[in-house]
Length: 222
Image 1 (cartoon, rainbow, N blue to C red):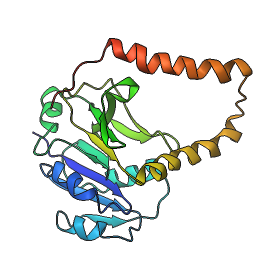
Image 2: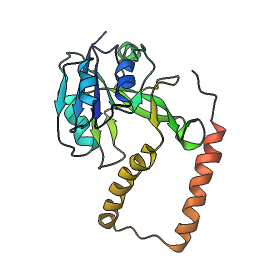
Image 3: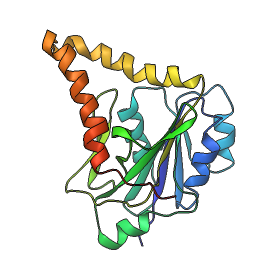
Image 4: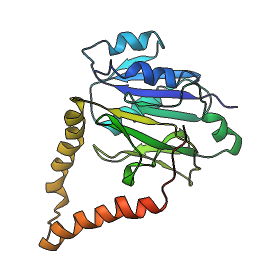
């Protein structure tokens, strides 16, 4: 089986980084790219890996591309996460990818938001491609809503693997970052909303999130 590297991007994540690091302890190599944390993030990371890099923040896509470029393993499959994401401890999803030679395996992500797990609407399952062959995939996108593009359709990692936690007072700040970035893109997009769109789009989004998703919803596995 090919070796696998796990990459994490961080900034002031001392509350979350320990769980994230434990969840990828199975990896052959752990790479951390820190954007200048002022808390104990880097000290915690040093207990798990010596592959820690400092890089000023230039956006999610740039940080993740840089992290993947630092991998030293000779294998091809890679897992890239944010510090607030963690997988099932001790689980190695790379074994499945290597057996079937897929370019990647999306995770059916779960979110812990405002004190509870979200298992409804279009938040679950939110299939995120985190495990991929770096020779066949690359991070792309703008300052927000980044994703991995592969040269062929990826497979599907069953079960619940990735969890993203956003808790307490951090909720507002974590949500506002992509919101501000999205607002900065609006003038360049030259999009203008009509009166019908102002009323119709929210209704259509509600139907898509809570009616269409409910038809395919299943009880998440532990």
